[in-house]
Amino acid sequence: MSLAERYFSSVELNDHLSLDGVDDLWTWLISGCRRPRPRQWYPDDTDKLFFRGQSDSSHALSNALFRRIAKEKGGSRVMERQLARVESAVIRSAREEGIGRHMTDGELLAVLQHHGGPTRLLDFSLDPMDALYFASESHD
Image (tube, rainbow, N blue to C red; front, top):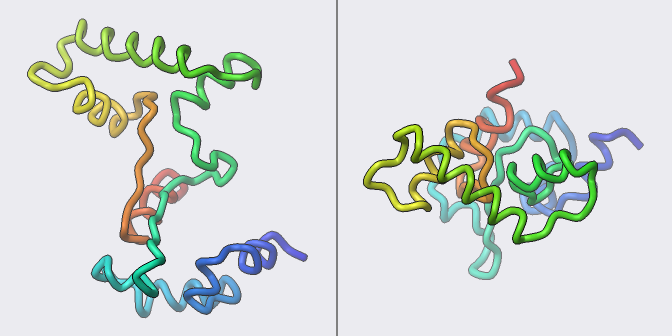
């Protein structure tokens, strides 16, 4: 079974949207997926769909700060206190450079994240086209 076949048979969202393969996905994207109202993505009141625009599925739900620390540690366990300590150092360094005046730490982290800084924040969207942009923006 090819990677595409495994993906389309294993992801529940594909069942919701009746997507059986790459051709179906492409047709759906170009014909019916033009900035839908978020409510259209909810098949019923119990299902909520959120989209994560990342180009590497192996990242799962890990954040950039976690991945960076894990890589430096050679894949050994990353503790919350390590994440907090490094995140505090990132905030302190940014403020020393004059970034984030009149911002809370959370606001500063959001700005840093959107400029490539490692944070514990994760981006999600209600719109799959937003997620698709971020997943593919660096892959011309």
